[in-house]
Length: 128
Image 1 (spheres, helix red, strand yellow):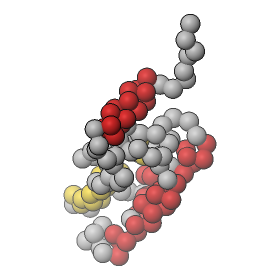
Image 2 (tube, one colour):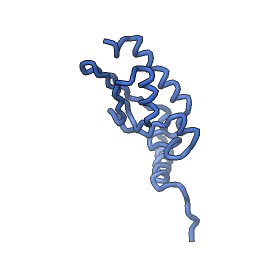
Image 3 (tube, helix red, strand yellow):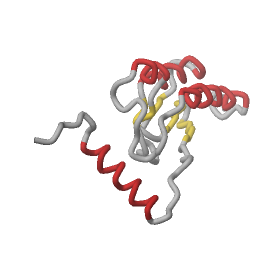
Image 4 (cartoon, helix red, strand yellow):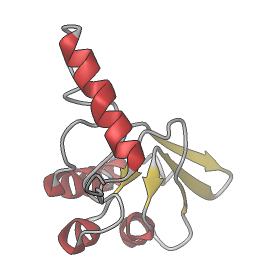
């Protein structure tokens, strides 16, 4: 009887594929472009963000832009689960793994991402 592994099968398949790519001399992705869009339909501001977002992103963006903005995930790309700092600290569901990235999500990305959004207000994208 072989020892059982707690590693999910999809992660094993992903690891095997990454190893095959390296064996063929390919390089692994070191970065990935993240799609962000801001739209305004009449008075309604809409933020379209890629990936599977946590509600914490909507809460933080509403703090920056007001409670009436509409925040959508899964927009223009579904590359990965986009963890928040809370999930990264607590661990658990897909917080540090993704089928696209080859390294764990860095907590600093969460801060950098949320800090860039208030710059949109200064450009008056949402205040027109």
